[in-house]
Length: 265
Image (cartoon, rainbow, N blue to C red):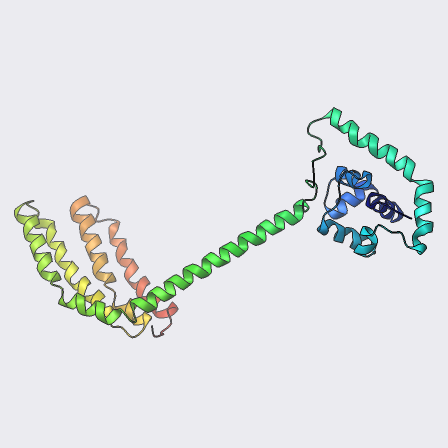
């Protein structure tokens, strides 16, 4: 005895006591999708078959098989004798009348367009994908910074520091200051440029630090803040509240001392 997939879907639903609305809500599809399954114009996908199998307490094979086993004949006859004609008539009427009533009603798609994961699963998959991408991006950024610090303070640090000490940076600062004073008449406040010299050599010395924490301690943070304070004061006359920049000095050193671990490059 042959039994179609649409007949088995209708039988299991009715035999389990579910209305189309109840079943649609439990597996996350529309009522119209259930109707399409049970009249044979669409078929459930793998995920939906698994959901139906768990809901009805039967195996996937019981839902998908085309042959009716001997112990299923009474159930098949029960379905054919009591519900099939009435169900098919109602299903045909409900489905095809909808096409003439409103374009907003779910139009029966072509092919396997109805074989789409439920909306809840799609949203969950999208959220999981976004979390995976963010985690991968975060790991990539951490790896770049970690390897960059290791390279900057490891293999290349001695060579870079040696070149910086040999480079005549103070002479260049003097040349720039003389040019700004004699040509641009900026003897003041161009003298602030001389503060770049200790900044330069402190950075060069930090490259020889044995740990990342020492590297941060040697940075010329106080000199840079003094330079910013003088620039804002002389050029823009903003002595207040620019003085608050000096509060960053203790905050910087306290943060490095407390939160940065003393580790080698």
